[in-house]
Image (tube, rainbow, N blue to C red; front, side, top):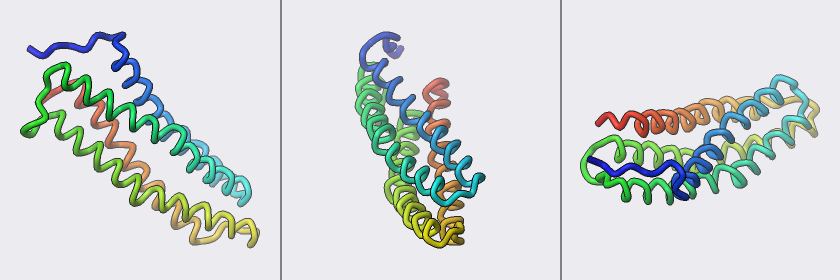
Length: 160
């Protein structure tokens, strides 16, 4: 039988904070960016996408670090195996894939949205290039947000 992690152990509290930072940032940024896009004001959109990028470094990055460190500590403490294919190794694969997509796809798309929205301010109209980058951001953003939700399900059920 696996040892449990006490509810108020520091690693559990830090893991909860990291997960909260990580997931909440995704939903909040999506909400504000969608609102900016609906409003259609190039300056407002530009400021919003710059803040989305800033939020990644203030919330996502520290959240990721907390999740990786505390998740590894708690898994080892509870005696879960990192060998073979199980809920934990699949979760680690999905988490890694989410991070890879964030670094290689989402961050470059966000830089592109910032660049295109700055140009849209000069042109006075939202460009097709911004709209295309925004669409890709939504598609890959949804994907990278679903992975942690699936991981959360695996963490709760520990089904295999």
